[in-house]
Length: 117
Length: 109
Image 1 (cartoon, rainbow over the protein chains, first blue to last red):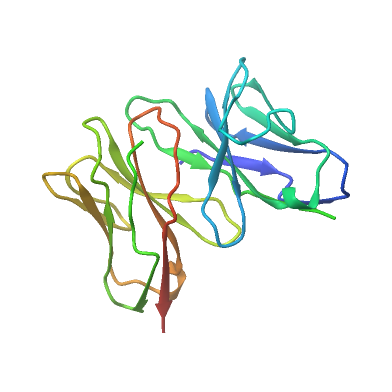
Image 2 (cartoon, rainbow over the protein chains, first blue to last red):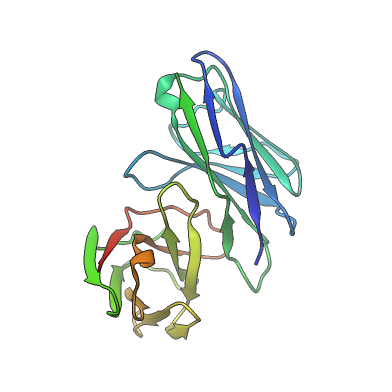
């Protein structure tokens, strides 16, 4: 099946710094990618929808200036957490769809554990 | 997007068949039903998807009654490694996926 990777798998950063997380579709082109955040023992929360070549669409309550999303190619989307704070510590997961009319399965990345100290 | 309701948690024993039911009373005509599995610190993994009646693959079966207001994920002969959170999702193609709380399945030896 289609594979989605994320890099890094985990990162520790100091408060006030910025962190970039990459999401790649390895063997298919993804017009649309999604970014989620998951706190311990909670469900995934959709943060934004990333469309190749256009601005991302953010969910209500998600600060677009704090969580910068860039989808520069059909295989890569990046999420940058700017001026990170300890409350941004979470598990960040991306997903991508092939966009096929016959299979609308979304493929999820393995996630990135962000810890802000 | 249709809301879904699932049991918060379930326990079962190794070798048993586990059925997890999901309610989606407001499902729309063009909505599909999809189930995902998630292990701790991993991304969700697709299990099965269906529109109506019954769908079966190598890991699970999905039963959908005629009114489509509910669905049941059936896991045959579970093992300890099936301990995970299972999410029932309803939506049409191209919809963004909104996750509910999921069902925390705990398999006991």
